[in-house]
Length: 344
Ligand SMILES: Cc1ncc(COP(=O)(O)O)c(C=O)c1O
Image (cartoon, rainbow, N blue to C red; front, top):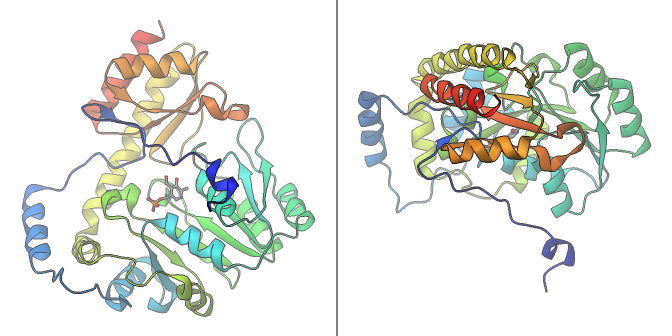
């Protein structure tokens, strides 16, 4: 009944974080201000949950489009950007998907669910991407689609603009530039938009992870095609109402992102002073570091009530690497203090 390759998979594992300082999933640590929370609840109270949600979401797409500086018909909404990755991989012609390695796991995972071959292009030891090599692999594999997370997860770095531009101009399949960490990075890629270049974004890292809302920007004609494989009513009524309300208060989230960027620099400075820690540049809301024994450090942090992400099992370039999400100031202090104790 069930395909053997699906049987062989493990379900996406989310570790139990009850009662812990949670720095494993690149969430925004700040909760909604009390006055805003009350206004938001008033908005939610008016949502008619007996009715299906707005299917076309023209108003919400319009607000997001205005925020992104594009037209409404250039915007496609997904239940998280994960769902949009799935829509893309469902719609693009049969043919390989090319991604750097390491990168965000869902490009590879969803490709495999859909029986699409995946070719990877290894990053260098300092996590740089060779555009010529990437394009060679795309040509060799007759690739139809490629994903570039800019900045990249889990490495945290942003490849130079010239690298991304060279790939955008040299690849004739669909290139998806995933800007999940755009709010924490120094540049965006909207100027590279073309018939075969799309930009993927999410509100998850900006403080709305629980709402599940991502969006794709592309040329209107291409977006209209992708929209045909969107599940009807994929964005529920509570998320639609919440997003519309929160977009009117977007400056709060932009300020929080600025705060997180400043905290990232503080954490990075703290880590750089510690013996036995190698840090890597980050343009995201997390930092990647390498220690002598990541498994032990991870477990000892857990014993102290701090949950981060252990990347060691991926081996290769990520051997002995740990990924720490930037949290609130006190949480960052806690992880720095704990690491100082552990690494003595
Ligand atoms: C690069 C990248 N893209 C997309 C996502 C998915 O985000 P969401 O489905 O929450 O919108 C993530 C989540 O970690 C990510 O790191």
